[in-house]
Image 1: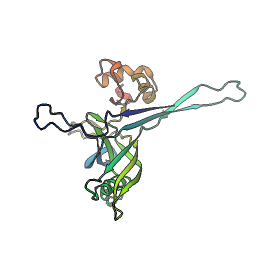
Image 2 (image 1 turned 120 degrees about the vertical axis):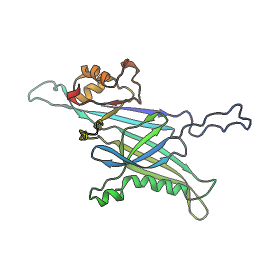
Image 3 (image 1 turned 45 degrees about the vertical axis):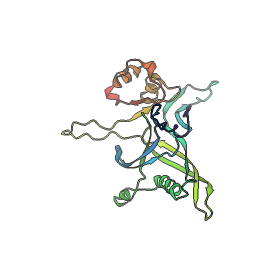
Length: 249
């Protein structure tokens, strides 16, 4: 069973610039970014770089699936009841459009190479004999996605200069959630351990998340208290829930 939601932006580009008089100045549209982090056993490490969207994406597709198994007993006329066996990680796909037809420089190629670099180990991780590509987080205004790794990047160049330099490209990027293992807390630091999180998508509810994560739909009350949610009906798609440990429920 899976749920898919497509989030569509109101406009793919920036808003009109302020008027020369400044009387009707408009605020600029916030640009989406793809932030790159070092990968650590407990989740996100230090921030490495930022890839800024030249044009905000028109659609962002998020998919979440659950595993159900149905065992058939020998001689039974009907199939047995389904049993929940776990949740699949969230998957996110989007497109990034780059255009340098005005400047006709190498900025498009540079942006595409940055994306391809998200699928290869960083130099630091290779030197530590633990090769790992960077983790990424999609950030757009107040919305932040889950920590993820890039599973694929497909770039289609659609415009070239007279000497063959690509100056326009459409890139399809696929991300998959990286579940973070609870980090060991330093008794003297006083900081919280890294926690797993769940990004609410269309069709999710506190009860469905509680059942998917803990096998008990009635644990939604504990989940709400843990996230200081007063009204469960206000958990809209895009809400990020911190998941307590079973001992904390």
